[in-house]
Amino acid sequence: QVQLQESGPRLVKPSQTLSLTCTVSGGSITSGGNYWSWIRQRPGKGLEWIGYIYYTGRTDYNPSLKSRILISVDTSKNQFSLNLNSVTAADTAVYYCARSRMSTVTTVPYYFEYWGQGTQVTVSS
Amino acid sequence: EIVLTQSPLSLPVTPGEPASISCRSSQSLLVESNGYNYLDWYLQKPGQSPQLLIFLGSNRASGVPDRFSGSGSGTDFTLNISRVEAEDVGVFYCMQALQTLTFGGGTKLEI
Image (cartoon, rainbow over all chains, first blue to last red; front, side, top):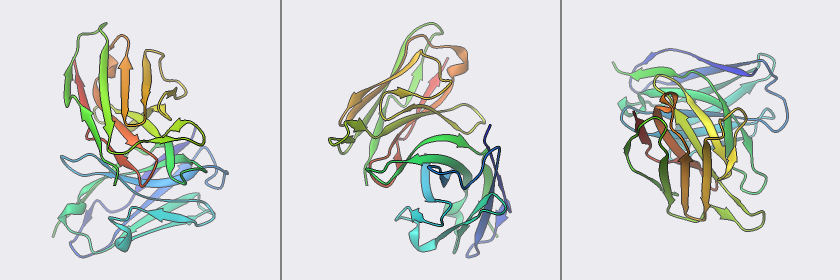
């Protein structure tokens, strides 16, 4: 059974960089056809897709956050990571990592079958 | 950006009774070339991560009880629960996967 676990600082100061890591267990991050995403849920708001990475390093990001995001992968550790820079209070959220499939027609992730438990990150001085 | 509008926002139900949630898209989610509607349904139970219920409009995910079903095409979609159980309490979200992913605002099912 595939499991995902988020880790990283729970408190980040404004203007600094939020860094989270997702550790995948029960399966290889390099298994074909699987795409690895970050999704967040801000207080009182719904779910927001941040971006994905494939094990080859290919990425795609939500245009609304693209200028501030970097998602990377470390296949040797079976991990992928999120860096979100220049954070503000509006970036306070529960951050989830998740595994999906990818449509070859739309080239957009879908079928988020596995999710981490989520980690609360607060941006505050 | 594709906007998904869910209704109702809140859905009080009685165990054993059916329930229905609507998701309306600002653009068609049907890809004519393969006939698929790129819409998923998720349930987020209290204190948990979202869990996949339905993908590509009407396909039940592995392990999902058959009381859950998805229907619709184009811009109008429905999630039906044939007989609600107490364990179904939570917030249901639709998600479109045609363009940059977006989610509906959620429907809270309460017993």
